[in-house]
Image 1 (cartoon, rainbow, N blue to C red):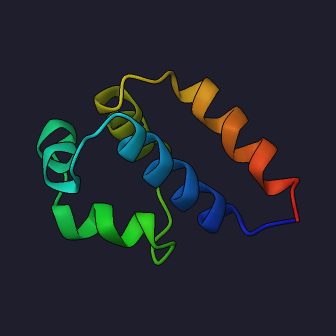
Image 2: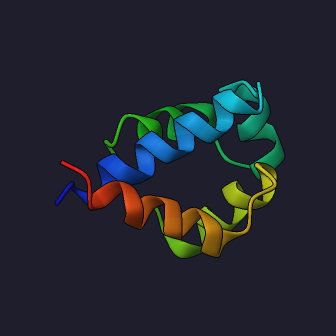
Length: 77
């Protein structure tokens, strides 16, 4: 099973890129620092639920849908 931080990182990056949103725009929309977004996307930081809610709102995805994607990714090798 994959590490949770790596699965979150992968999903954040994939969703952000699929929506053609830069890290800078996401940081502005979620009121977080761009370097923090970068650290999350590289799996270097763990995210709190409160912060994840800010990010998923900015990405226009429901937090429960995001968590399901992360959970599905963790089940892969």
